[in-house]
Structures are given as C-alpha cells and as structure tokens.
Length: 307
Image 1 (spheres, rainbow, N blue to C red):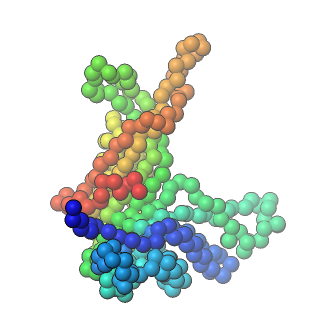
Image 2 (cartoon, rainbow, N blue to C red):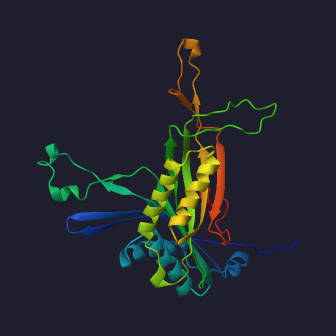
Image 3 (cartoon, helix red, strand yellow):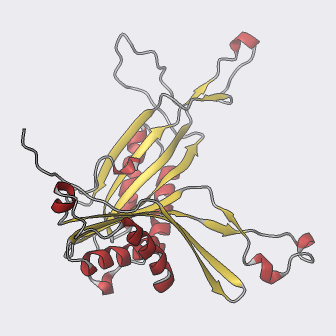
C-alpha cells in the first residue's frame, strides 16, 4: 500500500540552561529547560535519508547556549522569541519553529542577624534556594509570518479549607457520595494563557509583569470565590484573568480535584467536626475548560495543559 509523509518535526528537547547575571556582588539566576522543534521542507530526509535540509539537533542545542550569552534571558518568552525567529529566518528549509520552555524559579536565602557576622552582606546576594510553588512554562511558535505565544504554569497546589460545597448533583443507583455543605477544595493547577501579541515590538507585553499579574488574579479568584463546584471556581479564575489582562485572549485550565474525605472517627468514640481528613491522591476528578474573551476563537490545544 502506498504511503505518504504526514506532519513531522525534529529538534533537541530539554536543553537545560542556567544563566547567571552578575550585577556586582548581586547575582540573578534564570534556570530554563528549553525544547526546540523544527518543521519545513523535510521530505527528502524521510524518503531517501538526505540530510541536505537538516540543521543538526546538536546545532539547535548549541544555539540555545550561545543565545543565553548573546541575548541574555530577560524572560522565558523573550528568549523563545529570539530562538524561533533565528531558526526560521536563518535556514530556508525551516518554515516553522516551536520553542517550549519550563522555568524553574529561585529566591535568595535570607540570613538571620545572629549569622550576619559570619556571612558578609555581599555573600548573601549570591545564595539561593529553589522555589517550589510552581513551574512556569511557555510555548512560542513562529512560521515566518505569524507568532503565537502561550504561557502558563503547572504544579501549583492550592487549597480552601472552607467556603466550598458540593450538592444537588445527579444521583443514580451507583451514587454513594454524600452531599457536602462545608468541604475542603484543593487542586493542582495547570494553566495556559494565549497572548494576542502578533509582531508589533512596540506592543510587546512585559512578560515578567504579565506572569506575576496573571498568577495574582488567578489566586485571588480561587481564594475569593465561594465555591459550589470546582467548575465554578475554574471559570472565575479564568474570567478574572481575561477581565484584568488586556494582552490575554484565552485561558485554559486543567484542575485535578485533590479530594479530602472526612475520616469516620465514631468507632473510636470521637466526633469529627470537619477537622480530620484523609487526603486521597487517586482516583481524582479532573475538571478542564477554556475561558475566552468574547468574540475570540479558541486555539490552545486541549491536551496542552498536560505537557
């Protein structure tokens, strides 16, 4: 049976690059995991093995490190834009570049006054501890004309210890779940948001500020919503972002419900007044949805929040 080549891409995945910027005695860290995927006129390499149009994946790796020195890393988004533009504009056979980046955050280690006589003020400025709240991510795609920037985060665990209910749901002969009028609501947030930026350098968002503001509005919505369902909370989180950040047109969330079940303490003669819970890691409910600015078409892939 005849066959033809379908969609294809290649590149170097998970290039770990750490950039130290030394501002005198004060150091700044950018810690990225960069994956490059290139596509274009690549039929011959698949059909005949000709590498005439193939930029080696080792070269893409080297480019990542060279650009960290040449351009620095102002933000994950800006760094990805530099890379995507370079691969598409410098190599004629390459028509499209997709750059995916995970960013690992670090914060400075604070020292107590008692230790200050042992650790000089200058030394404190280059000591860090890895932040553990979430991993920041971004994906930049460029085809020579059109840009698409999708940023986000994963593994951000949040919890409301009250102000959450779940009742009034459909019941059939297999339903055993009891209605809850005061429950723990917890989830591990994976979210992506798409920027409406195209190619106007003057209108390019402040990527660092945008990330911090999006996270702020997301967390505020989670904390301030009296939740009757995780779906309701999800929608409020996305709506708060869209309504407050004009540079973003689409938000997609994947929220696993990290269930907490009240432990039955009656066999021990104890009353459990919403105090002691069993935290179940699986199975879990998985709530996913996209929130869009009115009149905007969805473009974030449904499975992207699981990357």
